Amino acid sequence: MQDYVVEARGLVRRYGDLVAVDGLDFIVEKGEVYGLIGPNGSGKTTIIKLVCGLLKPHAGSVNVLGMQVPDPNISHQIGYMPQEIAIYPDLTVHDNVRFFGEVYGLSKKEIEKREEELLDFAGLTEKRNALASTLSGGLKHRLSFACTFVHTPKVLLLDEPTVGVDPELRFSFWEYFYDLRKKGVTTIITTHYMDEARKCTRVGLIRQGKMVAEDHPKKLMERTGTDSLEDVFLAFCRGEA
Ligand SMILES: Nc1ncnc2c1ncn2[C@@H]1O[C@H](COP(=O)(O)OP(=O)(O)OP(=O)(O)O)[C@@H](O)[C@H]1O
Ligand SMILES: [Mg+2]
Image (cartoon, rainbow, N blue to C red; front, side, top):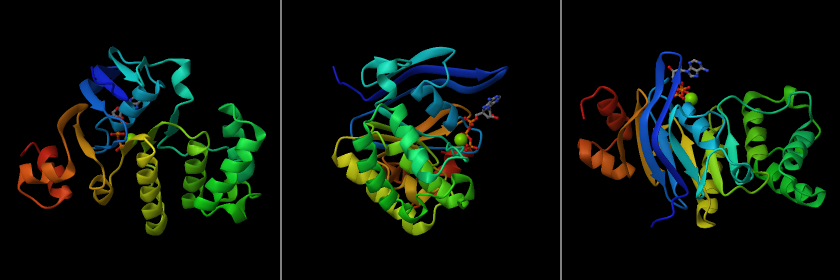
């Protein structure tokens, strides 16, 4: 039997009468960069929250690394970057990274090493002692990114991680994801940027809480007879494909 890193079966999640995730099945294999795309309100964030165990499904189940979510042994393996920036505004950049490192049980030395690497990567070294509240929007995103990776997670759940990030750093983020991929890290990422979706190993297109298409980006374009993922997106969202 194949061991999937993420395996969702029959997932349902409602908010009151609204069915946000409607009987969703999907699997993600080790080393994939799996993109979830779909219109605003289609259920992507809800899916990410179900996979990381922040929300309970009303039906169905999610397994991560062979364990059924929620399981305390999974959380340390996951790097979750929420859509809303999750940093502490009253702490400095350094203290934010240190705090997240401590939550994940890293030693002081490990935190120092990771902090140096990640702040350097995110271009935040000079802002190390600045209060997070004083950072620009894009810099807050960079800090949230650094906090997500501090514990070297095996599974990344990234909800629109590059919104508001300048093109150069967006490019670096993607190089970083691909480096991690070579090390066996598995990523699920939501995005509204079709140039990013093109870089995914597979894309799942979500509409009204359902998976309406799933394939390699190139194959999705072949299926719809276009050479643009925007057109694929529009065709599926309008129910034309
Ligand atoms: N806490 C909540 N209470 C009630 N409804 C909610 C809640 N969270 C999400 N919803 C609804 O569930 C649906 C799916 O929302 P979700 O945030 O998962 O979509 P999304 O695909 O991530 O959208 P976006 O692209 O705008 O981030 C939407 O109709 C949304 O209004
Ligand atoms: Mg969302």
